Length: 132
Image 1 (tube, one colour):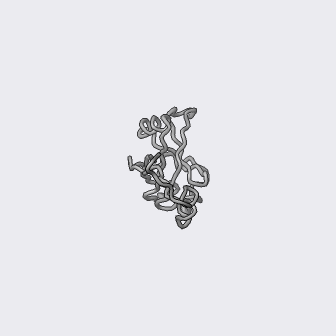
Image 2 (cartoon, one colour):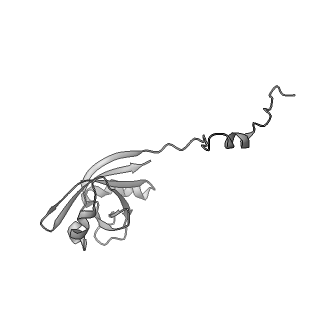
Image 3 (tube, helix red, strand yellow):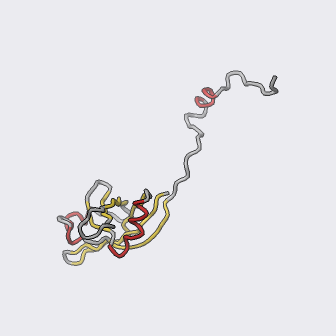
């Protein structure tokens, strides 16, 4: 026989129900890794950008989506706000490595670091992150 003793009434179900409602299950390690600073390209081609600009907030999270069928750039990465509004693209000179990362299944996103309006043109600076 084994020397191990079973604590009466302290099985797994008991442990789960007596942890003040909190489960002590290990969570996967996640982090956001800063990669690069750049700007949003093509803002002057976005209809309604002047009206949208006041609603764009510093540190707002931006979603990136690959657009491999783009007629001008097969490495294109479109940038959208969290509610799905398109605000432009990662500049073509910066998107080669980022498009490869995304094509390999990596999750990239951005955050607005600064913005200003110059006449009718809206300049948006962003920071790019890898979520791992």
